[in-house]
Length: 108
Image (cartoon, rainbow, N blue to C red):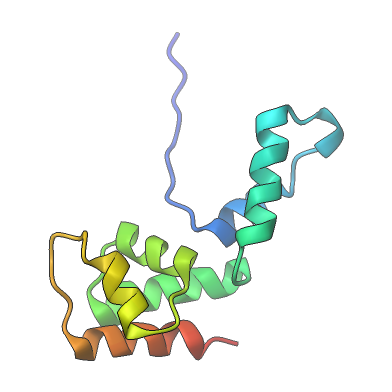
């Protein structure tokens, strides 16, 4: 019988929260390394990440995947944001990039 696996898009803070629930003593090496990575690179709380994702999608027209990328990286300048959005299939206006940065840095 095939097992149904649900895929869910998670930001680093959300994935960190999910993995915090496992018993580290019983975790395998990959789980421990992943948890270590997520702990080191999580730049927001899971709640902040969810809020930012929703706002980036609704206010800036980003796809869920793009919103997660932005939340994971948390760029601080337009130049930094442009560098990594340049690989996307759409060009974002300066106005949209400014709005993205405002959402990322006005949390809390």
